Amino acid sequence: MAQPVIIDTDILIDFGLDKPDAVQTMVNIEQYYTISVSVITAMELYSGCRSKKDLKEVEELIIPDKLTPHSGETDPPLDLVAVIY
Image 1 (cartoon, rainbow, N blue to C red):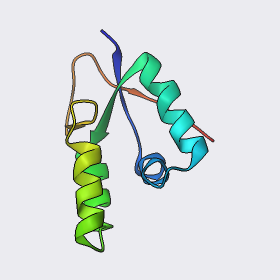
Image 2: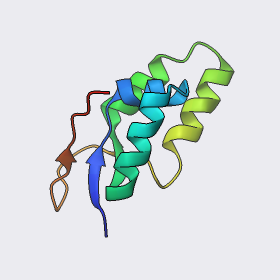
Image 3: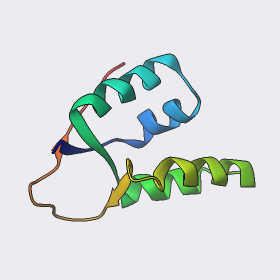
């Protein structure tokens, strides 16, 4: 089973905008980790929605099993990955 990792808002926003570096970063991370988001990241994505289209895109991004919101302690602890792309 892959180690879980939390992805930050900036990477997810760029990924949602199909920016090549962010897409490649997500592909690379997905090879080795189970991608998760914190409830803070989920809130940031929802608060940035300016239309129903934006809301739908956020819901499609964070509802699938690949992006599972985490809000507290996990066992084992989540690895934090800082990626500069």
